[in-house]
Length: 113
Image (cartoon, rainbow, N blue to C red; front, side, top):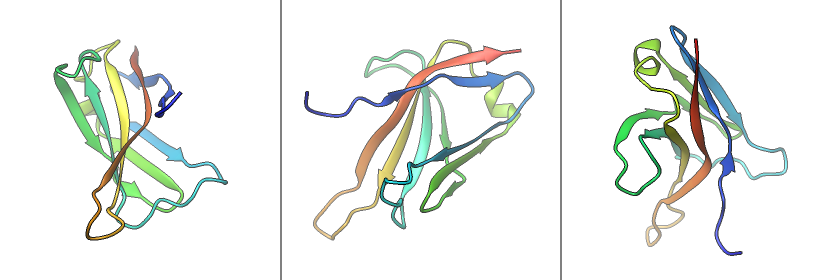
């Protein structure tokens, strides 16, 4: 097989609670380079034309982890069983190269009350 299949995980949201999570890289993985950004994109469906319901940027990207803290006002608007992706954007390594967009994780949202 060629290509990469993102890790499949459930993203759990609870009514009235912020979403706070740290995505830690494995010890053997290289550090996230300076300039790396990340975001969680939530869509209604998995098709290329599925509407985007929310985009949550990481509040911190350090060499070891991606950190998210999303306020309740944003999380409570997300319905059950929609789809999410964690996209990591690695900076260009040279003036002639482009940003590398990598989907690390994907899955569905589960609402817990």
